[in-house]
Length: 490
Image 1 (cartoon, rainbow, N blue to C red):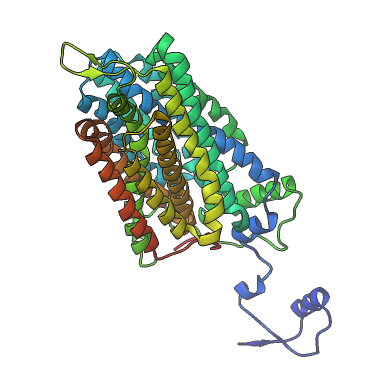
Image 2 (image 1 turned 30 degrees about the vertical axis):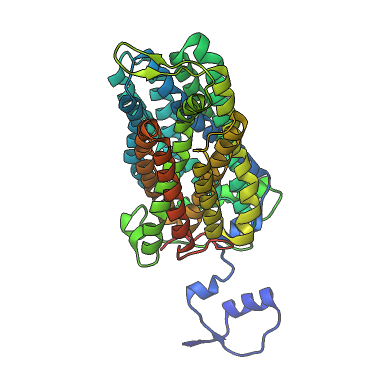
Protein backbone atom coordinates (compact mmCIF):
# COMPACT_ATOMS: atom_id res chain seq x y z
CA UNK A 1 0.00 0.00 0.00
CA UNK A 2 1.16 3.54 -0.70
CA UNK A 3 1.74 5.76 2.36
CA UNK A 4 0.08 9.19 2.13
CA UNK A 5 0.96 12.30 4.17
CA UNK A 6 -1.35 13.57 6.84
CA UNK A 7 -3.98 15.75 5.20
CA UNK A 8 -7.62 16.56 4.97
CA UNK A 9 -8.67 12.91 4.91
CA UNK A 10 -6.86 12.39 8.23
CA UNK A 11 -8.57 15.44 9.74
CA UNK A 12 -11.98 14.16 8.70
CA UNK A 13 -11.26 10.78 10.25
CA UNK A 14 -10.05 12.49 13.44
CA UNK A 15 -13.25 14.51 13.67
CA UNK A 16 -15.42 11.47 13.00
CA UNK A 17 -13.71 8.85 15.12
CA UNK A 18 -11.71 10.63 17.83
CA UNK A 19 -7.97 11.19 18.44
CA UNK A 20 -5.35 9.50 16.31
CA UNK A 21 -1.63 9.42 16.70
CA UNK A 22 0.44 11.65 14.49
CA UNK A 23 1.20 8.95 12.03
CA UNK A 24 0.77 8.87 8.31
CA UNK A 25 -2.60 7.68 7.05
CA UNK A 26 -2.61 4.49 5.06
CA UNK A 27 -4.83 4.86 2.00
CA UNK A 28 -7.38 2.16 1.36
CA UNK A 29 -9.45 1.12 -1.58
CA UNK A 30 -12.76 2.82 -2.23
CA UNK A 31 -14.72 -0.23 -1.10
CA UNK A 32 -13.11 -0.23 2.34
CA UNK A 33 -13.59 3.52 2.79
CA UNK A 34 -17.31 3.00 2.08
CA UNK A 35 -17.66 0.80 5.15
CA UNK A 36 -20.69 2.88 6.22
CA UNK A 37 -22.63 1.92 3.08
CA UNK A 38 -25.50 -0.55 3.39
CA UNK A 39 -27.34 -2.96 1.13
CA UNK A 40 -31.08 -3.42 0.55
CA UNK A 41 -30.86 -6.52 2.76
CA UNK A 42 -29.43 -4.35 5.57
CA UNK A 43 -32.15 -1.75 5.06
CA UNK A 44 -34.98 -4.31 5.12
CA UNK A 45 -33.62 -5.84 8.31
CA UNK A 46 -33.20 -2.41 9.98
CA UNK A 47 -36.62 -1.09 8.94
CA UNK A 48 -38.21 -4.22 10.36
CA UNK A 49 -41.85 -5.25 10.08
CA UNK A 50 -44.47 -2.54 10.32
CA UNK A 51 -47.16 -0.57 8.50
CA UNK A 52 -45.27 -0.69 5.20
CA UNK A 53 -45.26 -4.50 5.13
CA UNK A 54 -48.86 -4.66 6.36
CA UNK A 55 -49.93 -2.43 3.49
CA UNK A 56 -48.19 -4.71 0.98
CA UNK A 57 -49.61 -7.77 2.73
CA UNK A 58 -53.20 -6.56 2.27
CA UNK A 59 -52.85 -5.14 -1.26
CA UNK A 60 -51.00 -8.15 -2.66
CA UNK A 61 -53.40 -10.40 -0.73
CA UNK A 62 -56.47 -8.89 -2.43
CA UNK A 63 -54.88 -9.73 -5.78
CA UNK A 64 -54.12 -13.30 -4.67
CA UNK A 65 -57.66 -13.89 -3.36
CA UNK A 66 -59.06 -12.70 -6.68
CA UNK A 67 -56.64 -14.97 -8.54
CA UNK A 68 -57.80 -17.94 -6.42
CA UNK A 69 -61.38 -17.33 -7.54
CA UNK A 70 -60.37 -17.79 -11.18
CA UNK A 71 -58.58 -21.03 -10.33
CA UNK A 72 -61.36 -22.54 -8.18
CA UNK A 73 -63.86 -21.81 -10.93
CA UNK A 74 -62.50 -24.99 -12.54
CA UNK A 75 -63.91 -27.15 -9.73
CA UNK A 76 -67.44 -26.14 -10.73
CA UNK A 77 -67.13 -25.36 -14.44
CA UNK A 78 -66.31 -28.91 -15.57
CA UNK A 79 -69.27 -30.71 -13.91
CA UNK A 80 -71.70 -27.98 -15.00
CA UNK A 81 -70.59 -27.95 -18.65
CA UNK A 82 -70.65 -31.74 -18.75
CA UNK A 83 -74.39 -31.61 -18.18
CA UNK A 84 -75.19 -28.47 -20.19
CA UNK A 85 -73.08 -29.29 -23.27
CA UNK A 86 -73.27 -33.10 -22.93
CA UNK A 87 -69.49 -33.52 -22.72
CA UNK A 88 -67.51 -36.72 -22.34
CA UNK A 89 -65.02 -37.15 -19.46
CA UNK A 90 -62.03 -36.43 -21.72
CA UNK A 91 -63.62 -33.20 -22.95
CA UNK A 92 -64.26 -32.11 -19.36
CA UNK A 93 -60.64 -32.86 -18.51
CA UNK A 94 -59.40 -30.77 -21.43
CA UNK A 95 -61.14 -27.66 -20.06
CA UNK A 96 -58.89 -27.83 -17.02
CA UNK A 97 -55.85 -28.92 -19.02
CA UNK A 98 -56.24 -25.93 -21.35
CA UNK A 99 -55.92 -23.58 -18.38
CA UNK A 100 -52.75 -25.27 -17.19
CA UNK A 101 -51.24 -25.39 -20.67
CA UNK A 102 -51.66 -21.62 -20.73
CA UNK A 103 -50.03 -21.36 -17.30
CA UNK A 104 -47.16 -23.61 -18.39
CA UNK A 105 -46.48 -21.40 -21.41
CA UNK A 106 -46.90 -18.16 -19.50
CA UNK A 107 -45.08 -18.75 -16.21
CA UNK A 108 -41.44 -18.76 -17.44
CA UNK A 109 -42.03 -15.77 -19.71
CA UNK A 110 -43.72 -13.68 -17.02
CA UNK A 111 -40.92 -14.66 -14.61
CA UNK A 112 -38.18 -13.63 -17.03
CA UNK A 113 -39.96 -10.33 -17.77
CA UNK A 114 -40.36 -9.74 -14.02
CA UNK A 115 -36.60 -10.06 -13.53
CA UNK A 116 -35.82 -8.00 -16.63
CA UNK A 117 -38.42 -5.20 -16.59
CA UNK A 118 -39.64 -5.22 -13.01
CA UNK A 119 -42.14 -7.02 -10.81
CA UNK A 120 -44.69 -4.18 -10.67
CA UNK A 121 -45.44 -3.66 -14.40
CA UNK A 122 -45.76 -7.41 -14.95
CA UNK A 123 -48.15 -7.70 -12.00
CA UNK A 124 -50.40 -4.97 -13.41
CA UNK A 125 -50.38 -6.52 -16.89
CA UNK A 126 -51.16 -9.96 -15.46
CA UNK A 127 -54.13 -8.63 -13.47
CA UNK A 128 -55.66 -6.89 -16.48
CA UNK A 129 -55.01 -9.90 -18.72
CA UNK A 130 -56.70 -12.45 -16.43
CA UNK A 131 -59.68 -10.22 -15.73
CA UNK A 132 -60.28 -9.43 -19.43
CA UNK A 133 -60.11 -12.99 -20.75
CA UNK A 134 -61.90 -14.38 -17.69
CA UNK A 135 -64.84 -12.06 -18.32
CA UNK A 136 -64.74 -12.81 -22.05
CA UNK A 137 -64.94 -16.56 -21.41
CA UNK A 138 -68.44 -16.11 -19.99
CA UNK A 139 -69.61 -15.42 -23.55
CA UNK A 140 -68.15 -18.65 -25.00
CA UNK A 141 -70.69 -19.94 -27.55
CA UNK A 142 -69.24 -23.44 -28.03
CA UNK A 143 -66.79 -25.88 -26.46
CA UNK A 144 -63.84 -24.77 -28.62
CA UNK A 145 -64.13 -21.16 -27.48
CA UNK A 146 -64.15 -22.06 -23.79
CA UNK A 147 -60.90 -24.00 -24.33
CA UNK A 148 -59.18 -21.06 -26.06
CA UNK A 149 -60.34 -18.38 -23.65
CA UNK A 150 -59.61 -20.38 -20.49
CA UNK A 151 -56.15 -21.17 -21.90
CA UNK A 152 -55.58 -17.41 -22.25
CA UNK A 153 -56.74 -16.95 -18.65
CA UNK A 154 -54.23 -19.60 -17.63
CA UNK A 155 -51.46 -17.81 -19.54
CA UNK A 156 -52.07 -14.77 -17.34
CA UNK A 157 -52.34 -16.75 -14.11
CA UNK A 158 -48.85 -18.06 -14.86
CA UNK A 159 -47.51 -14.63 -13.86
CA UNK A 160 -49.59 -14.08 -10.73
CA UNK A 161 -46.67 -15.06 -8.47
CA UNK A 162 -45.19 -11.57 -8.99
CA UNK A 163 -47.33 -10.40 -6.04
CA UNK A 164 -45.78 -13.04 -3.80
CA UNK A 165 -42.28 -12.04 -4.96
CA UNK A 166 -42.77 -8.32 -4.24
CA UNK A 167 -44.06 -9.02 -0.74
CA UNK A 168 -41.29 -11.53 0.07
CA UNK A 169 -38.54 -9.13 -1.02
CA UNK A 170 -39.61 -6.53 1.56
CA UNK A 171 -39.86 -8.92 4.53
CA UNK A 172 -37.07 -9.15 7.15
CA UNK A 173 -35.72 -12.63 7.83
CA UNK A 174 -37.30 -12.91 11.27
CA UNK A 175 -40.82 -12.33 9.96
CA UNK A 176 -40.59 -13.67 6.39
CA UNK A 177 -41.77 -17.25 6.88
CA UNK A 178 -44.60 -16.41 9.29
CA UNK A 179 -45.88 -13.58 7.11
CA UNK A 180 -45.82 -15.63 3.91
CA UNK A 181 -47.57 -18.50 5.68
CA UNK A 182 -50.35 -16.24 6.95
CA UNK A 183 -50.49 -14.65 3.47
CA UNK A 184 -51.97 -17.93 2.25
CA UNK A 185 -55.18 -16.96 4.06
CA UNK A 186 -56.04 -14.77 1.06
CA UNK A 187 -55.85 -17.73 -1.34
CA UNK A 188 -57.92 -19.83 1.07
CA UNK A 189 -60.52 -17.07 1.40
CA UNK A 190 -60.77 -16.63 -2.36
CA UNK A 191 -61.17 -20.39 -2.79
CA UNK A 192 -64.01 -20.64 -0.29
CA UNK A 193 -65.73 -17.53 -1.62
CA UNK A 194 -65.74 -18.95 -5.16
CA UNK A 195 -67.55 -22.13 -4.07
CA UNK A 196 -70.06 -20.06 -2.07
CA UNK A 197 -70.58 -17.80 -5.10
CA UNK A 198 -71.08 -20.86 -7.32
CA UNK A 199 -73.64 -22.31 -4.90
CA UNK A 200 -75.61 -19.04 -5.05
CA UNK A 201 -75.26 -18.24 -8.76
CA UNK A 202 -75.12 -21.46 -10.79
CA UNK A 203 -78.53 -22.95 -9.81
CA UNK A 204 -80.35 -19.70 -10.62
CA UNK A 205 -78.25 -17.75 -13.16
CA UNK A 206 -76.00 -20.40 -14.69
CA UNK A 207 -72.25 -20.78 -15.20
CA UNK A 208 -71.90 -17.72 -17.49
CA UNK A 209 -72.83 -15.37 -14.66
CA UNK A 210 -70.40 -17.20 -12.40
CA UNK A 211 -67.54 -16.78 -14.91
CA UNK A 212 -68.30 -13.08 -15.35
CA UNK A 213 -68.61 -12.34 -11.63
CA UNK A 214 -65.42 -14.29 -10.87
CA UNK A 215 -63.40 -12.06 -13.21
CA UNK A 216 -64.51 -8.72 -11.75
CA UNK A 217 -62.55 -8.75 -8.42
CA UNK A 218 -59.21 -9.20 -10.21
CA UNK A 219 -59.88 -6.22 -12.45
CA UNK A 220 -60.88 -4.10 -9.46
CA UNK A 221 -57.72 -5.12 -7.56
CA UNK A 222 -55.60 -3.51 -10.30
CA UNK A 223 -56.73 -0.07 -9.09
CA UNK A 224 -54.86 -0.70 -5.82
CA UNK A 225 -51.55 -1.22 -7.64
CA UNK A 226 -50.86 2.52 -7.41
CA UNK A 227 -50.06 1.92 -3.73
CA UNK A 228 -47.74 -1.05 -4.37
CA UNK A 229 -44.06 -0.05 -4.86
CA UNK A 230 -41.56 -1.73 -7.13
CA UNK A 231 -39.16 -4.12 -5.41
CA UNK A 232 -36.11 -2.23 -4.08
CA UNK A 233 -34.05 -5.39 -4.58
CA UNK A 234 -34.99 -5.44 -8.26
CA UNK A 235 -34.26 -1.71 -8.63
CA UNK A 236 -30.75 -2.16 -7.23
CA UNK A 237 -30.13 -5.10 -9.58
CA UNK A 238 -31.29 -2.81 -12.41
CA UNK A 239 -28.92 -0.03 -11.26
CA UNK A 240 -31.64 2.43 -10.18
CA UNK A 241 -30.21 3.33 -6.77
CA UNK A 242 -32.08 6.65 -6.45
CA UNK A 243 -35.52 5.11 -6.85
CA UNK A 244 -34.64 2.23 -4.53
CA UNK A 245 -33.44 4.70 -1.89
CA UNK A 246 -36.63 6.74 -2.22
CA UNK A 247 -38.83 3.68 -1.62
CA UNK A 248 -36.72 2.56 1.33
CA UNK A 249 -36.97 6.04 2.91
CA UNK A 250 -40.75 5.94 2.54
CA UNK A 251 -40.85 2.46 4.05
CA UNK A 252 -38.73 3.56 7.01
CA UNK A 253 -40.94 6.61 7.56
CA UNK A 254 -44.11 4.50 7.48
CA UNK A 255 -42.59 2.06 9.98
CA UNK A 256 -41.34 4.87 12.26
CA UNK A 257 -37.84 3.51 11.78
CA UNK A 258 -34.53 4.78 10.44
CA UNK A 259 -32.35 3.47 7.66
CA UNK A 260 -28.80 2.36 8.48
CA UNK A 261 -26.27 5.19 8.54
CA UNK A 262 -24.45 5.92 5.31
CA UNK A 263 -25.62 5.54 1.73
CA UNK A 264 -27.21 2.69 -0.18
CA UNK A 265 -24.30 0.74 -1.55
CA UNK A 266 -23.55 1.24 -5.22
CA UNK A 267 -24.15 -1.82 -7.30
CA UNK A 268 -23.30 -2.50 -10.91
CA UNK A 269 -26.19 -3.30 -13.21
CA UNK A 270 -26.55 -7.07 -12.88
CA UNK A 271 -27.52 -9.45 -15.64
CA UNK A 272 -31.09 -10.44 -14.82
CA UNK A 273 -33.49 -13.14 -15.93
CA UNK A 274 -30.82 -15.49 -17.36
CA UNK A 275 -31.98 -19.09 -17.57
CA UNK A 276 -28.36 -20.22 -17.30
CA UNK A 277 -28.16 -18.81 -13.76
CA UNK A 278 -30.73 -21.22 -12.33
CA UNK A 279 -28.53 -24.01 -13.70
CA UNK A 280 -25.27 -22.58 -12.33
CA UNK A 281 -23.11 -24.80 -10.14
CA UNK A 282 -24.66 -23.24 -7.03
CA UNK A 283 -28.29 -23.83 -8.01
CA UNK A 284 -28.29 -26.68 -10.55
CA UNK A 285 -29.08 -29.46 -8.09
CA UNK A 286 -31.70 -27.35 -6.32
CA UNK A 287 -33.43 -26.60 -9.62
CA UNK A 288 -33.54 -30.22 -10.74
CA UNK A 289 -34.84 -31.35 -7.33
CA UNK A 290 -37.36 -28.59 -6.70
CA UNK A 291 -39.07 -29.02 -10.07
CA UNK A 292 -40.41 -32.55 -9.35
CA UNK A 293 -41.81 -31.30 -6.03
CA UNK A 294 -43.63 -28.49 -7.81
CA UNK A 295 -44.93 -30.99 -10.37
CA UNK A 296 -46.05 -33.43 -7.68
CA UNK A 297 -47.78 -30.99 -5.38
CA UNK A 298 -49.69 -29.26 -8.20
CA UNK A 299 -50.69 -32.70 -9.45
CA UNK A 300 -52.01 -33.58 -5.98
CA UNK A 301 -53.46 -30.19 -4.97
CA UNK A 302 -55.49 -29.62 -8.13
CA UNK A 303 -56.27 -33.32 -8.22
CA UNK A 304 -58.14 -33.16 -4.91
CA UNK A 305 -59.95 -30.00 -6.05
CA UNK A 306 -61.06 -31.47 -9.37
CA UNK A 307 -61.75 -34.95 -8.00
CA UNK A 308 -64.04 -33.73 -5.23
CA UNK A 309 -67.17 -33.81 -7.38
CA UNK A 310 -66.19 -37.21 -8.84
CA UNK A 311 -65.46 -38.61 -5.36
CA UNK A 312 -68.84 -37.37 -4.14
CA UNK A 313 -70.45 -39.19 -7.07
CA UNK A 314 -68.57 -42.38 -6.11
CA UNK A 315 -69.68 -41.92 -2.51
CA UNK A 316 -73.32 -41.81 -3.59
CA UNK A 317 -73.00 -45.10 -5.47
CA UNK A 318 -71.00 -46.62 -2.60
CA UNK A 319 -73.54 -45.76 0.10
CA UNK A 320 -76.64 -45.84 -2.09
CA UNK A 321 -77.50 -42.20 -1.29
CA UNK A 322 -77.86 -38.98 -3.22
CA UNK A 323 -79.25 -37.99 -6.57
CA UNK A 324 -79.70 -40.23 -9.58
CA UNK A 325 -77.12 -40.09 -12.36
CA UNK A 326 -78.56 -38.64 -15.56
CA UNK A 327 -77.87 -40.64 -18.74
CA UNK A 328 -77.98 -38.61 -21.97
CA UNK A 329 -78.88 -39.72 -25.49
CA UNK A 330 -75.24 -39.31 -26.51
CA UNK A 331 -74.19 -41.84 -23.89
CA UNK A 332 -72.36 -39.47 -21.52
CA UNK A 333 -73.55 -39.10 -17.96
CA UNK A 334 -73.68 -36.26 -15.50
CA UNK A 335 -74.52 -35.89 -11.87
CA UNK A 336 -75.54 -32.27 -11.23
CA UNK A 337 -73.98 -30.70 -8.15
CA UNK A 338 -76.55 -30.38 -5.41
CA UNK A 339 -76.65 -28.23 -2.30
CA UNK A 340 -75.04 -30.95 -0.17
CA UNK A 341 -72.22 -31.29 -2.70
CA UNK A 342 -71.45 -27.57 -2.54
CA UNK A 343 -71.42 -27.73 1.27
CA UNK A 344 -68.94 -30.62 1.19
CA UNK A 345 -66.74 -28.69 -1.27
CA UNK A 346 -66.85 -25.67 1.02
CA UNK A 347 -65.80 -27.79 3.99
CA UNK A 348 -62.90 -29.30 2.02
CA UNK A 349 -61.90 -25.78 0.91
CA UNK A 350 -61.78 -24.74 4.57
CA UNK A 351 -58.94 -27.25 4.84
CA UNK A 352 -56.79 -24.55 3.22
CA UNK A 353 -56.92 -22.66 6.52
CA UNK A 354 -55.62 -25.65 8.47
CA UNK A 355 -52.43 -25.50 6.40
CA UNK A 356 -51.58 -22.20 8.09
CA UNK A 357 -51.06 -23.41 11.70
CA UNK A 358 -49.31 -26.53 10.38
CA UNK A 359 -46.71 -24.41 8.61
CA UNK A 360 -46.52 -21.82 11.40
CA UNK A 361 -45.68 -24.57 13.86
CA UNK A 362 -43.26 -26.57 11.72
CA UNK A 363 -41.44 -24.28 9.31
CA UNK A 364 -39.18 -22.41 11.71
CA UNK A 365 -39.04 -25.35 14.13
CA UNK A 366 -37.79 -28.10 11.81
CA UNK A 367 -36.96 -26.12 8.65
CA UNK A 368 -38.44 -25.88 5.18
CA UNK A 369 -37.26 -29.26 3.87
CA UNK A 370 -38.65 -31.37 6.72
CA UNK A 371 -41.89 -29.38 6.71
CA UNK A 372 -42.30 -30.21 3.02
CA UNK A 373 -41.64 -33.89 3.70
CA UNK A 374 -44.06 -34.15 6.64
CA UNK A 375 -46.89 -32.44 4.75
CA UNK A 376 -46.29 -34.53 1.61
CA UNK A 377 -46.44 -37.79 3.57
CA UNK A 378 -49.69 -36.63 5.22
CA UNK A 379 -51.13 -35.71 1.82
CA UNK A 380 -50.38 -39.20 0.50
CA UNK A 381 -51.98 -40.87 3.52
CA UNK A 382 -55.23 -38.91 3.20
CA UNK A 383 -55.45 -39.69 -0.52
CA UNK A 384 -55.28 -43.40 0.29
CA UNK A 385 -57.94 -43.05 3.01
CA UNK A 386 -60.44 -41.51 0.56
CA UNK A 387 -60.89 -44.88 -1.18
CA UNK A 388 -62.64 -46.28 1.92
CA UNK A 389 -66.44 -46.57 1.76
CA UNK A 390 -67.35 -44.47 4.78
CA UNK A 391 -70.04 -42.07 5.92
CA UNK A 392 -70.29 -38.67 4.27
CA UNK A 393 -68.98 -36.96 7.41
CA UNK A 394 -65.82 -39.12 7.49
CA UNK A 395 -65.32 -38.66 3.74
CA UNK A 396 -65.56 -34.90 4.23
CA UNK A 397 -62.85 -35.15 6.90
CA UNK A 398 -60.58 -37.09 4.51
CA UNK A 399 -61.11 -34.50 1.76
CA UNK A 400 -60.49 -31.76 4.32
CA UNK A 401 -57.21 -33.37 5.41
CA UNK A 402 -55.93 -33.91 1.86
CA UNK A 403 -56.76 -30.33 0.95
CA UNK A 404 -55.18 -28.94 4.14
CA UNK A 405 -51.87 -30.75 3.80
CA UNK A 406 -51.52 -30.30 0.04
CA UNK A 407 -52.13 -26.56 0.44
CA UNK A 408 -49.54 -26.53 3.25
CA UNK A 409 -47.00 -28.04 0.84
CA UNK A 410 -47.85 -25.48 -1.83
CA UNK A 411 -47.40 -22.66 0.66
CA UNK A 412 -44.05 -24.06 1.86
CA UNK A 413 -42.61 -24.68 -1.59
CA UNK A 414 -43.51 -21.12 -2.65
CA UNK A 415 -41.60 -19.76 0.35
CA UNK A 416 -38.64 -22.09 -0.14
CA UNK A 417 -38.29 -21.24 -3.85
CA UNK A 418 -38.54 -17.50 -3.20
CA UNK A 419 -35.83 -17.73 -0.54
CA UNK A 420 -33.41 -20.05 -2.31
CA UNK A 421 -32.95 -18.10 -5.59
CA UNK A 422 -31.18 -14.70 -5.76
CA UNK A 423 -32.87 -11.44 -6.79
CA UNK A 424 -31.48 -11.56 -10.34
CA UNK A 425 -33.39 -14.78 -11.10
CA UNK A 426 -35.92 -14.96 -8.26
CA UNK A 427 -38.99 -14.32 -10.43
CA UNK A 428 -37.57 -16.60 -13.13
CA UNK A 429 -36.83 -19.34 -10.61
CA UNK A 430 -40.36 -19.07 -9.25
CA UNK A 431 -41.81 -18.84 -12.76
CA UNK A 432 -39.93 -21.86 -14.12
CA UNK A 433 -40.88 -23.88 -11.03
CA UNK A 434 -44.46 -22.76 -11.51
CA UNK A 435 -44.25 -24.02 -15.10
CA UNK A 436 -43.32 -27.46 -13.78
CA UNK A 437 -46.33 -27.24 -11.47
CA UNK A 438 -48.52 -26.57 -14.49
CA UNK A 439 -47.25 -29.75 -16.15
CA UNK A 440 -48.50 -31.59 -13.08
CA UNK A 441 -51.74 -29.65 -13.06
CA UNK A 442 -52.45 -30.23 -16.75
CA UNK A 443 -51.86 -33.98 -16.25
CA UNK A 444 -54.07 -34.37 -13.20
CA UNK A 445 -57.49 -34.03 -14.93
CA UNK A 446 -56.85 -37.30 -16.76
CA UNK A 447 -56.38 -38.99 -13.38
CA UNK A 448 -59.00 -37.11 -11.35
CA UNK A 449 -61.69 -36.96 -14.03
CA UNK A 450 -60.93 -39.89 -16.38
CA UNK A 451 -59.01 -42.67 -14.57
CA UNK A 452 -60.98 -42.04 -11.37
CA UNK A 453 -64.23 -42.77 -13.21
CA UNK A 454 -62.78 -46.09 -14.34
CA UNK A 455 -61.05 -47.03 -11.07
CA UNK A 456 -61.14 -44.88 -7.94
CA UNK A 457 -58.55 -47.05 -6.20
CA UNK A 458 -56.02 -46.80 -9.06
CA UNK A 459 -56.35 -43.03 -9.24
CA UNK A 460 -55.91 -42.52 -5.51
CA UNK A 461 -52.85 -44.78 -5.39
CA UNK A 462 -51.27 -42.70 -8.18
CA UNK A 463 -51.73 -39.57 -6.06
CA UNK A 464 -50.46 -41.28 -2.92
CA UNK A 465 -47.33 -42.68 -4.59
CA UNK A 466 -46.37 -39.32 -6.12
CA UNK A 467 -46.76 -37.57 -2.75
CA UNK A 468 -44.49 -40.13 -1.05
CA UNK A 469 -41.80 -39.84 -3.75
CA UNK A 470 -41.85 -36.03 -3.49
CA UNK A 471 -41.38 -36.32 0.30
CA UNK A 472 -38.12 -38.23 -0.24
CA UNK A 473 -37.01 -35.63 -2.79
CA UNK A 474 -37.68 -32.80 -0.30
CA UNK A 475 -35.49 -34.38 2.36
CA UNK A 476 -32.60 -34.56 -0.14
CA UNK A 477 -32.70 -30.88 -1.20
CA UNK A 478 -29.15 -29.43 -0.93
CA UNK A 479 -30.04 -26.04 0.63
CA UNK A 480 -32.07 -25.32 3.77
CA UNK A 481 -33.28 -21.69 3.69
CA UNK A 482 -34.39 -21.30 7.32
CA UNK A 483 -32.64 -18.14 8.66
CA UNK A 484 -30.82 -17.61 5.35
CA UNK A 485 -30.43 -14.13 3.86
CA UNK A 486 -31.98 -13.52 0.43
CA UNK A 487 -29.08 -13.38 -2.02
CA UNK A 488 -28.83 -10.55 -4.54
CA UNK A 489 -27.05 -12.39 -7.34
CA UNK A 490 -25.42 -15.70 -8.19
